[in-house]
Length: 384
Image 1 (cartoon, rainbow, N blue to C red):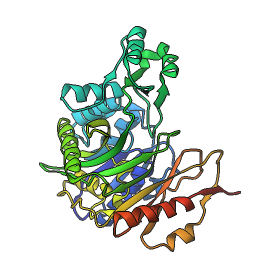
Image 2 (cartoon, one colour):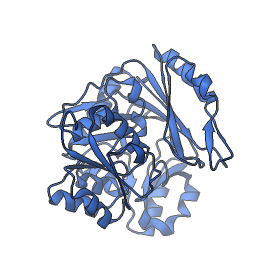
Image 3 (cartoon, rainbow, N blue to C red):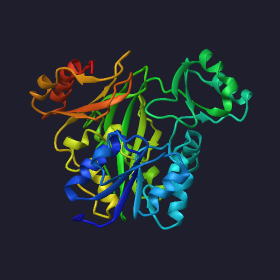
Image 4 (cartoon, one colour):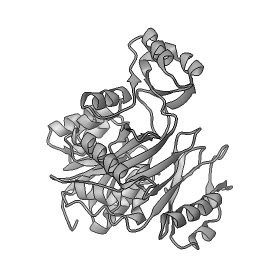
């Protein structure tokens, strides 16, 4: 029996986010079911009940959710029609289906920011080929950001292209979103948690991405931003999240230019890579916080315990099949280093396989130690 609540919770999707959400729920004996196609998915062995099914199938999601009190999702690519119907039947969906309806389409997401007067970089949702080309020619930068309106995930569907390359994609205008390129900028994230009549943000996170895969490969908190900039970022993040009028956990990705202008890039309505460091680094992790929200508990303390960095672990080029992390013993011998592997059976290039959290007493010490850890974090494939 669950200590804080007897609610029956469901997670649509059984990837690493579901796994870490279940790990955080385990101390409370929470009753959490998982719907996922693959019985070998990371979350399967931790769920109170594992239901095999297609998360994009309206029929499967409806069948999964109808006996639950509360439902969440760890990935955006699910049957929105199903969770809308479940909400209408009285199942609490967190965040609300209307949030996902906005978020899953990058054009609708951008229009949402514009409509609510939330700062975002100039963009174009072209209605025709000419409008697509006009926006490109009007830009003063050498490159432009081209995003797929739907289907993007983990850096997929986002390209930073020279103008001449972007022009070649003009025939696909109705599938694309164009965005002005911010050339000299730093990317940040704020994890915002919304519970019953309360909202709490985690400290600002500074992020660095792989230029080829667009995956975050390194982040840390506290950042090198000023206190005033951090407060402004939090204020903007909390303001845009409040417009959704929904409980949940939201990762608000921000771009800050060298002039200090702040723009909302994208929002994820779920736990996010930019919050993984909170597992060891915060009094309440992003995963515990979402469990508190699902179980109608008070929000936890979002303060940092000490400076923490996260290093993403992904499959290397031409790596396939069975694998192991090299130098694991050496890494775990270092004070303040924590390895999290996602229990994925096979490695693939750029596939998220795990992450490492690094803690230190000062930001300077943290960046030095994290650099040492990064040099040692490599996978090797193994025969089976």
